Length: 265
Image 1 (cartoon, rainbow, N blue to C red):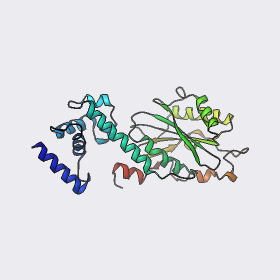
Image 2 (spheres, rainbow, N blue to C red):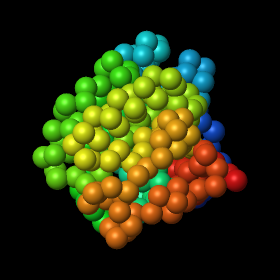
Image 3 (cartoon, helix red, strand yellow):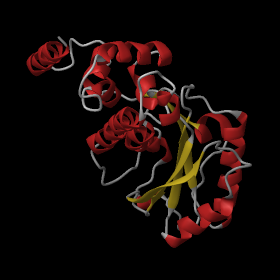
Image 4 (spheres, rainbow, N blue to C red):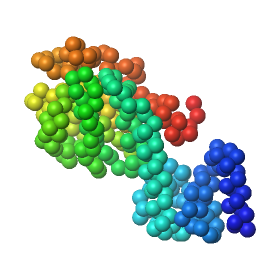
């Protein structure tokens, strides 16, 4: 009976993909590959009941998954591989820009790197004097705050890469894209530290779900200044007004977010 059911499910997938599948049916089919025999339908229902929906299932930690009856090491690993594969796909979907001269371009580049993460992660993006990206590196995992993030390693990385300017970005998993007081304190700490080395911190984005907020523009009260031979000079192609190319303080990631998550509208 189970084999016939699996065959019907596969045929249904071949005809219409996952468009007509519920969350538990998608999980049911995924689990075919770690549970060759048996009823994965009931197990998929248990996972949805335990975590709430498909996204929260694949975002769960392996130990949390294995707390659900019927999920062993192989099934937990398979589910985490699905999450990792989705993140890689989402990242590769974003077209690489030759020039990241607007906050929208930077935010679109960063959003897929946070897809599915269940903890905070801080990234540093380094740019040359034409706003071409030199590198994008993770700086901290866990609690992102002025107490947990040190200025010196960030300055050393920026100097080592000969960065002309920096943008920071971190996520609020299962939260909202609104900077906390701790986020603002961290931003000011790093802004001041980088300024001493004549490396402008252009912006710090906080990202959650399909939205982001630029912390420097909205919370820090800092007016970017043109000085010396820094990247902020108009001759180097950086225009502060052009940089903030969205009217709203909070921007929605569309259509990329909708394509990856399957949301409509």
